[in-house]
Length: 251
Image (tube, rainbow, N blue to C red; front, side, top):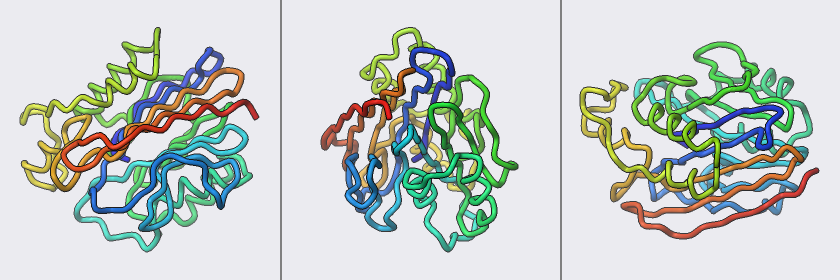
């Protein structure tokens, strides 16, 4: 997952709104959003290479999502970051306790941002930045750096989400995720991957023959606990492959 924008609004009719793009090499095998047969109550896509996931819903109102930290110089972690999302969705503990456990083994993973919560709380954790943080109400963005790092794609998508809060229809949230316009060279970050790659990665929606946005996801959590999730899947050069939608009742 390379871009997540979200509105956390406790007490509102829609306490949590999420719009997210997962960017990955097309050759990496994965499954689209579905119920997990080996984990009751878990709904997510699945990485078939390591077995984890990038975004999903779980029992008791659990939500989790992940982005990687872009740093070509970092050592490869000995464990897959996707398990951080999967383990929280499967588990029965509260977010704070789970993050305390993750903090104790954070060195086992390459850099990451982990976003987890339930109907009552939402947490963010990036071990490079500091301890887990309980988020107050607000509109946030995550890409491949820290929370709200002002990369052009993050600023654009976060502003687009803010503009849609009055009428956050799923289609409107999907539209903000489909923006394929690259940032101007003068606005690009320097993350060590070279100018051509920075350009490719600067758009909200990424498309190329070998790497790009594999899934666009929208999550809407209602005050009564009802949850909606829509996922669109894409192949090489942005070819649309399919769409899955689900509605989970409270509980």
